[in-house]
Image (cartoon, rainbow, N blue to C red):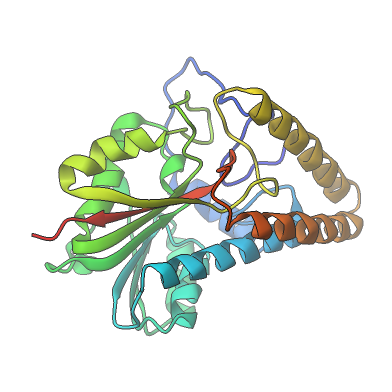
Length: 298
């Protein structure tokens, strides 16, 4: 049993080819996932336990807070979080003092929980590929729209492009669009869990809509799965990750308390190393990155 995570990575860093048409994940699948797993495991790597995923999200928090600081996210900003899931980024916006926060997710279970947890914010059930409902689409648009670890779950190209365009339309002129993905050097074939779109695929949709890339910053280097288009470095890191994830996964399945202890220790060590590497500009790695786009002023 292979651990399945937010990227559905292949052991050697190459996306698997497919013969049959793929469909995006359904609301029912996400409802089952939210009901069956823990808080962090529900939206992280199923099979690697709550503790390892906890460390991954601590590093995501560190990266996002610094990103918000670099881009001067004001407390008065109107924010939309797409695919909000367990509300991890909703809580970050709360901690950052943002008062006008909206969220959408395909899972009614997730939305129901978020409405109870954050009654001051507004949430709607929505499939972003089908378009945003008028109830959460102010005419003036949002200052800041985030789609974190979301769009790669859409494995059909036409639906991916539609979802990305809908995200972009929600941004006001001069506003920011934040997207996390692996952004491999070239587009790779989709597998059953995710698509593998290069940065150019995003820019092909966003460029004609008036967006420009402000930055592309790595979140992980060795603490999360690897996705690449070949090369020695990618294959070495992918082989290492395949072995590591199997060891943790086997420990979790054999005796969960021991597996969780191992996940905690390795998670602390590996995310600590990645935290040191986040500030360097020499190597972007083959794992999750965040692209920050700005929409042109009218």
